[in-house]
Length: 330
Ligand code: FAD
Ligand code: NAP
Image (cartoon, rainbow, N blue to C red; front, side, top):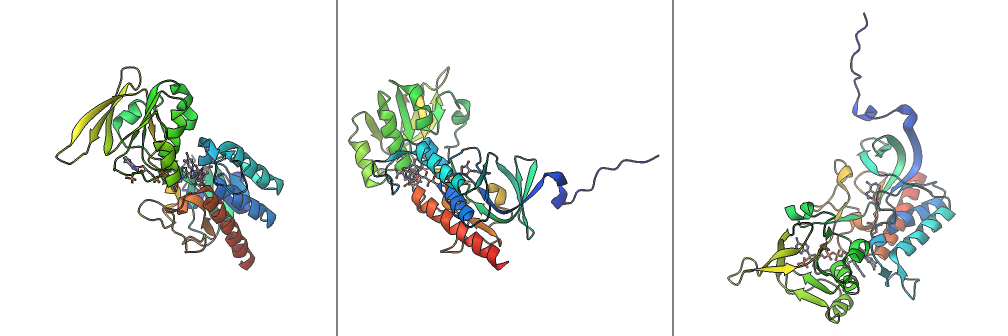
């Protein structure tokens, strides 16, 4: 009688239905300004790039309204519109843009294996990681309790539901300033919960906030909890935490918006790719090269300093040129 044994899968073979391995010269992960720009350059260089969009097609800019600082749009443009134009331009040169998420990476060999949606393997000569960054939360239990019931990390997406109501935005950077200003146009009152006594936001964004009458900045406040029976009805804050003047403050709000920055989407590469402590991928200065040959990084996932659409696009261009030269040298 034949005894059936479980298959002895080596790491390389795991999840690999041989039929389901596709070989490509240049694989681009992410569809923000970095990924689409890399796709434009790689397609024009005849690398026949395949780009997987990830969950957020178009990237972070699809969560914003006006983009005023991207060169070439003298009257501004909305984030979603601009990203649609990036996509069309990449497609015009033949980039193969597909919906899918990279769920695992094996960068141990000469060919790089990326698993898409847990079931398809792409074997690529070069990989451009342009997976950007994701919104951060404070880590309060209440954020999970009220997820979709008053807690949001995207004012542009959810602000409409709070028309005429009172809301709070946590953070003091450009995103918080922009979200607060946007919400002020819809809501009765917007509190900005700022942990220090200064805003990190650029001068122009600060001016916009300070000139908006229905935004109130709560300086040196930190949110510690939320309350409400059927959704958020208010927040509990601590003012001047850790000082002799520390006091608890309650505000009545219907919506609680997080705008405290983003974390780089680099987790699945960390076994092979060097990152800094926060998770930003390290590249050789002036290039997009990572510590793994043939793997390049572009955009916010490798940029703790600038994190702008135009810098992301610029680094996408660098990554495609680096990939092209790497392939030419092979
Ligand atoms: P992202 O735009 O973050 O895109 C990342 C892409 O990677 C997404 O498509 C995502 O789906 C994909 N992805 C993630 N994980 C995976 C995976 N595992 N597999 C495949 N794909 C994956 N900058 C400006 O210059 N001007 C502005 O006015 C401006 N406004 C902003 C407003 C807001 C609300 C925010 C949040 C940011 C703003 N920024 C602005 C910053 C700007 O959006 C970013 O710097 C820029 O989008 C970064 O581009 P990126 O291509 O690196 O990544
Ligand atoms: P950011 O610049 O990192 O600012 C994050 C803000 O959240 C800071 O004020 C920070 O406080 C606060 N914060 C962080 N963790 C916190 C916590 N646990 N509790 C309370 N507050 C906390 O992030 P961002 O505003 O998302 O901007 C990211 C990048 O995108 C920037 O380079 C920005 O210029 C760019 N951007 C540009 C535009 C534009 O040009 N129109 C719009 C949006 C974003 P501290 O200041 O105390 O650290």
